Length: 199
Image 1 (cartoon, one colour):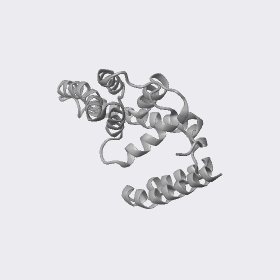
Image 2 (image 1 turned 30 degrees about the vertical axis):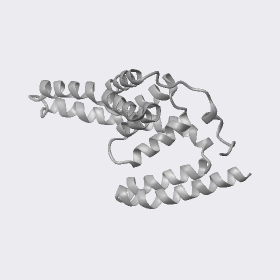
Image 3 (image 1 turned 135 degrees about the vertical axis):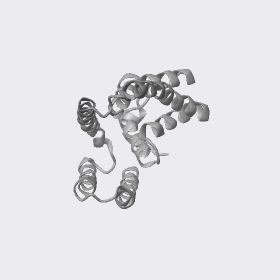
């Protein structure tokens, strides 16, 4: 194994104490995740609990995004499984889902009669804008991690720009973009890592 790991990967950090800690932490995280959980996940797992470095969060979140299913569910399974195996993955998943599911069912029952009113529809549109802003803010915050990426920041920004143009402007299907740009970026990253290890 190479010694040429980025500095942040070798920095000492915290870890979940036990499965109960995982369950409670993901419950607290999920109950804060109204309108977009990415900002909350990054703040809780990286800034507060320090279970992941920023680099590790970016890498794990990237994997969680390309796997089928909700991103944060995939991330919870990865973190829980990494520390306590299948039991840890189930504890993190349970924490992520149980309390919010009960809360959403109660809220759905409470607002069922007013969901189609102009006021409720306006509130939902406003929340959508806030959610987009939260995701954009976290994306900008995480850009600092690209300086440690083996491909270099400019290459990462170039790939990100191509992805935005393909999906946001050209409206190409996500699967096509993922299956074309994803392998190209992965091969180039592997080449850059090999070059760095040789140097």
